[in-house]
Image (cartoon, rainbow, N blue to C red):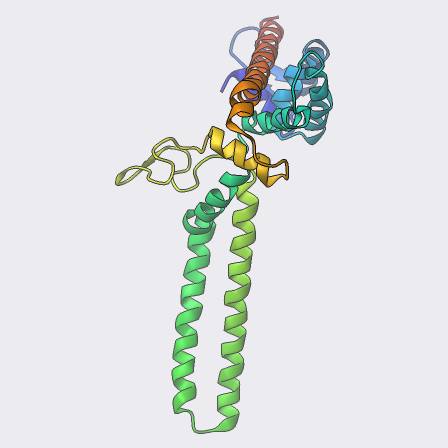
Length: 265
């Protein structure tokens, strides 16, 4: 990660950020924000793309989406609705967010392999062991009052199991919306036994063309024919991604240049 991107992600959490040993040793928050404002003015789309990807800034995402219809003005598409939807999907891909067909797979991995899941499984296993022990006690219990107390405890433990499973399901679903990083290997692509089998050693789940076409069906835009996909939509998706990378790279370069000049002055 470049120094400019590091400062971008940390700007809301620090008052001053060390950028180097030459010239001014510290860039104050005011100086950094002033540089960001200058770049926002000169490279608005590129800066919004950086804010969307690295800071998860919702207003920046909204501004990008508002601009996207203008990209279609000079294009002659048979299905402009699909092209516009693909522009939004390209933004998710650029921001390393999963598409619909990947979210189920990622949620399953978060549910089975995350630290939260391991903690939940230990809790659930412990409660299930206690439930079995109490059920044996119920079978041999000779007093109705004691049996009712045991059944009440069993019921409480069963509620804990249900609530914990629901909690880890909700956690897995929420995590699956945030990133395409593999939760099993934490993005390294490696396990102790070798290559991570879940992500095939890639460390993340980059959406394939099939994933994106499935996503179009998922959001209600219907099945896309091979002819339409190959002739119009796939080239448009590549065009959008290329535009986003070019715009964001130009913004990073401008940020880096201005921050270097400020630190050297």
